[in-house]
Length: 464
Image (cartoon, rainbow, N blue to C red; front, side):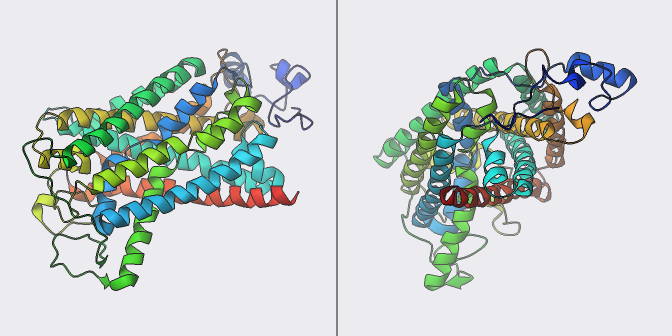
């Protein structure tokens, strides 16, 4: 197999000149017997289809960036740091994403290659770092898919029915697989529609928060726009609560903890670059999309958390907190559905009765579509790693696509970790809600390491 190292698209494979791929009997790129014949017949090609326009690329990245964090986890952040502490945490997290995306935009402007997140550390630092980044990015997005699938299944439990967590998880996983297997052009069009639906949702929530603050509704807004008096890992329930660490040091630690939690919500902008192998005009579209796309979700998040903090009291016991298991019973009832969202709490305080069920459906949609993007990114990352593999059986299966240029084998293997979502099928028991937090950390940690690797690559890029 010959890799075109003289081309800017470093991972493109020269199929026509490689007799090992042209012949089913090639000794270095085949498995034997029925498995070899099946692999050759189903996975004939080893290149992706360049069908994604710029609006498709931004749609995929925006859909991945806007998941469930702003709708649910933001309440936990407010409970820990107060509305002002949450706003500061969002600003710091946004600055981190801004710095990383500017570095990526500069490098991709010069080198708009396939799989740039792997190529940059591979080229500018070390081949081993490039491989490590690829494996970590695949694993991180698999864990993101699991986390978001669990969250989506939890949102289905808002409505009283016999449709339990197990059935909901199974149906959602099937939907994820078939949406990714339908071909990249149709997938890109779906993500473009999802993007505008999420923009409308975020814009509507911001307007609704302004309206409730202005006095719309018969209820009274209960808020206290201030920073938490210190750090308490279980949050605060009243002004009489004594923080574990008080004073300035406690406030700094609370904001720092909130920032690490807010990072999960801001991640996903780099997915713009994960579409490089299927971008129709990567040299034109990737630099612009990488430079400006992430500004949209970051701006929405900052505005949303500001208006949310003006409408929510961080002492409210209804706010979701993952680590509370022995305090107020009202904080433990049920699971993470729309009733735990700070937006819904603010709406209920204002006396608006008709929106919580609709918002739960919107949050379910947001979680599912973000998981859809995570599966897309993990499958394309695995496909790229397979093309670079020295093992013939890996190249002949995971490194191949069907006649529609869809990497079905890579999608299937990346889909398998989704079975971990069934670990949370008993999440009405609070002890079984821990998987969603563990998988969330298994996404945030590796992606932060990948960001550090990209920044190191940028420094070496500047030096070169």
